Image (cartoon, rainbow, N blue to C red; front, side, top):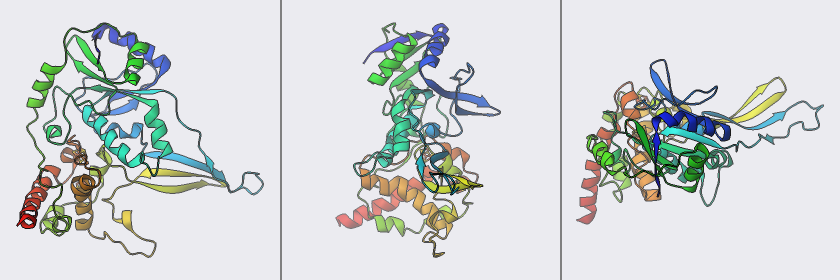
Length: 351
Ligand code: SF4
Ligand code: SF4
């Protein structure tokens, strides 16, 4: 894999060249926070950010997305027919996505791109996008990616990995899509150094941990019925922040919105933390208390997903839910409780 050196003084020129070929997205600061936005009117990605408040998952999975349009006007020949919205497949590139957020997109892919079902909306946007990652040299205190199957220089889900070397970037080309973007930008000076030294230093800065080693293969029912869930869920106000900020949460709801005689069918992010998420049309709610909902979130991320896919946990350790939960519910503490409980069950089964 090629490593290219890009002088920061040349970065803006490459950027301009890219804007002719790609719709670009990148981190920008708005008020006190950074978030990923489409870079229009010559706006550039601000790569001095530490992490964004929301993950960039909305670039491939918009928070609200039109699926079909229709008219109820009987005078129209198309009355009452669902018409698919045109595909969005122009070339796009995300500049500066963090390795954890890119790995999260690979995890979400396991849900939207399966043998049985291929989600056309998610896949069109995913296939049209080139992911240019920016390694984390100053991780946040709440990050724990190195114990969540990821890391500050992790490469899964990326087409290019950039490492900031003060006056220049080193860019590691990881895929053909990445090579195509580098060519379009005109970045081609081969580097003599690699990314390894900075990688080791960055990894050593991450001291927070998630405990998951006993969860695979542990007794699911014993974990489900463990007595810590009541305490763990006590403070939750079911605001849904943890799921909206999470790069690996993929739940959505489908709704119709009608204005006069014209309507559209759209999907919107939803959250397993909302009380009405699982309400049946009969009025019965199988997850009617917050204990049920909090337990579902953690069991899904740390147990059901682990057993179903055998690819680790459904969390990349970005730390957003830890830093943004208004009542300090912390996945690292819950994982510890679950992991301890799981170790008892493994011992019980082995005896
Ligand atoms: S962010 Fe915290 S309070 Fe809000 S739903 Fe999630 S766990 Fe509950
Ligand atoms: S569960 Fe929390 S730490 Fe893990 S990926 Fe989601 S937001 Fe990040």
